[in-house]
Length: 284
Image 1 (cartoon, rainbow, N blue to C red):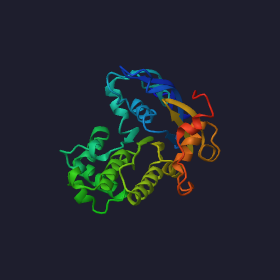
Image 2: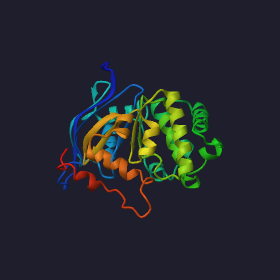
Image 3: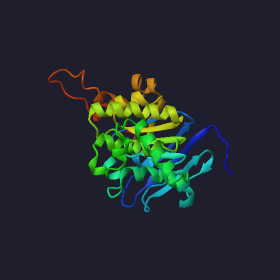
Image 4: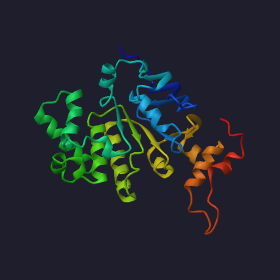
């Protein structure tokens, strides 16, 4: 039985630890995402962004120790049986992973991989599945969907592979789409097109978005609200305008300054995060 709630995803006091690490990868974070809402999670590499996403998807390594709560429409996900979790993944919650070459099965044609999502969750007949796959590939900007569907991942460009991943994530019109650095491996021209297609797909599906990135320019295009994560903790959150134009935490100010190098004078010293941490005790 599904519990009715205003929030799709509710994370409360979530911590994730791995054996041998002194500090938790994620440390008591809380985050909420409502229906149709677009939220960004930003921070430097190693700050805990991807671990948070994998925890939501139930894809952490077996040796991860997870405490706290992750609720989907009011139902607890932590401790959920994998068979139940698998029914959520790909249908109600989907994810676009960071590196499309490793996220796709190199031994399987891409059309079959996209159709597999339909087969697992919708039970569409083979002919109908093929038609929907081609339609979805076309919607994410693939000009020759039949050729791409019949190709192996190694035969496609990085931009095409990322479009295939987006098609896989959106084909079942999920309630929540998680994107983990979806344009990191792409050049700026392809990146702009992929982001445009991603926004269009979200609009059509009416999906909420959790967009994970260290690229503030990309985040500013995609989300309405931002949470800033540092060493596994959320140190600041607010609207896009509040975070990017009037940051309150030194770490947030440092992220923004180190991303804005256009205003550094020729020969000037580049800003570094440690300069901003001197204004605080480096605590949270």
